[in-house]
Amino acid sequence: MKKLFFATLLLCSLLFSSSFLEPVMAKSSFCAKKCDTRCANAGIQDRCLKYCGICCEQCKCVPSGTYGNKHECPCYRDKRNSKGKPKCP
Image (cartoon, rainbow, N blue to C red):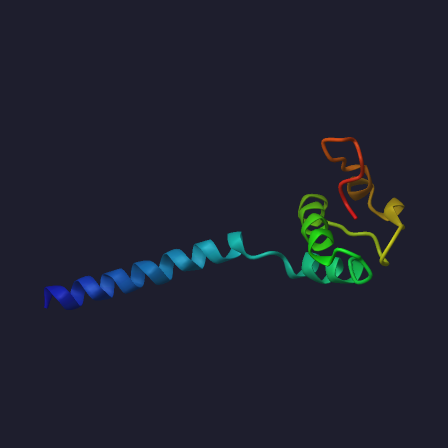
């Protein structure tokens, strides 16, 4: 009886905790779709998607098209890396 109670309690706690962790770990579908479009023609796709995703999560926007149009999203446009170059693709 104690083993069944313990197993049920453990299962419930795992299910309960996973429901809180999933939204934190998951990337937004908005950013994923926008960055897929933005990085479609990139030479180094994985790097473009990584930095686009970071910028999108922070700025909540991604310029349209595969290049340019950064005036549409000033936060995205103004992000710089440690060397002073544009961070967002």
